[in-house]
Length: 348
Image 1 (cartoon, one colour):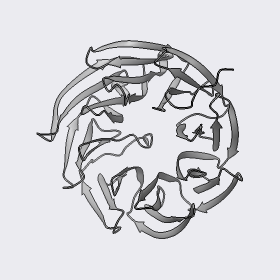
Image 2 (tube, one colour; image 1 turned 90 degrees about the horizontal axis):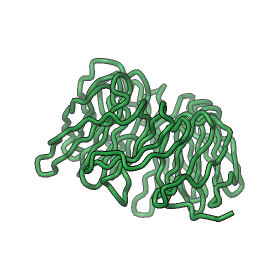
Image 3 (cartoon, rainbow, N blue to C red; image 1 turned 180 degrees about the vertical axis):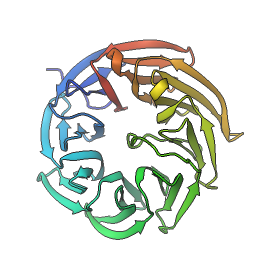
């Protein structure tokens, strides 16, 4: 078998076939299908060394080698939702069930467990000046837990009570930014002095589902937060902690950005076939234009390409297609036939 380097490809989760498809976009073809045989709802893929690492919803970390074979499959929970690397050989996994964080050592395949008695979300690893912190949030207890990491082992540093349900989090610079489900607030935790601030945008309604983690965009110090259940996104200035509401088509799910200051938003509900494209002006500090494009049936996930930021790739679940859209030419330039595609991950 021809062996490819693990980087430089498009990885697409095919939810109902319990497979991952690998696309060589430069060659314009699908080069592999990896059958993993697990629950791939909300599956997450990250890349480290020579391997890709897939977290399944039913609690497996699956290592995929450079020849696109399952190299390892390790059980870390019953219901898992996100993960990050503490160091090259140690992974921290956020679990809904059992509630807590699994710490997996890839060398000896042993797993330790931080019991939280709560669903865990927003798991992030923050590194600065040779020091590492592990941060995660407890949905059911309204807490943020912070651990110092020494020799790849987390040691508890501090617990912060914020109240209500934390539904997602985003790491930007030295800030851990999180959303509160019922209060209509955004929290900003400074990871240097562990001070926190709240910004209330008065949502007035409840969200109806939890977004994919890491689904917020950033442009020039502004964070763009999907506000599931309400037809607008929040633009948060991290320095001033001021915000703006940006009206969108319906309930936003993902917000992604590129280096040319474009934003893309997809939706659930009545606009689930649409991607909205926005232009952001750094000089004016605001959105200056918007266009809506009907591009597929139930668009689930999308990414801009780093190397060609005019291109955005997205999954059209009900069409069994992954499509590439040129935002300058305003047309589909490539399609790949993949059954029930959902999450898209780029190993650029």
